Image (cartoon, rainbow, N blue to C red; front, side, top):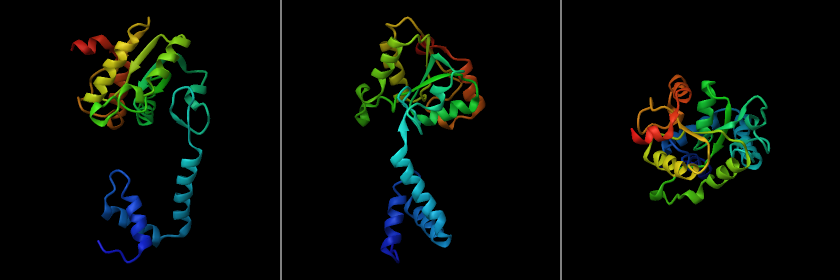
Length: 205
């Protein structure tokens, strides 16, 4: 593709780095920004700079946050004895949208995937175990995607958590195998949360 400007080419190249954005779409976005007032482009650029420079990770659950402790962990009305284990913030946003869960979360920061070189040591598993040891946690809910990586991570966690005297649950499998939770509709996901089952039952099925 021949670009009329090196500046346009560089901007399109950077935008095409984003997931789901190909080179043609990136070029359309760049040209759209050029057709509009500069303040819109400046606003986008500044918001990205602010994001990179100021975003934090909650010291309690590892979710992204504007403060040291996120709003969910600071909320005294939420049940801190029930922890829902998720892959990343996208799942938290999906579950919160259902308004069916009032506990706390723990963000692993990924899933176990040997093919991608991601082992348990690269996830926030040790932090989860420390949290259970120090707090009066009564239930852990696995809310990971129904993929091979999600199931592998669930099973690894189950083995690690089995030594604790706590309830270990998994969201109900009304969700198709292979689906990622962020794309599930809120009604289905909400039902899966409220109809959660003991994890060992899901293993035997």
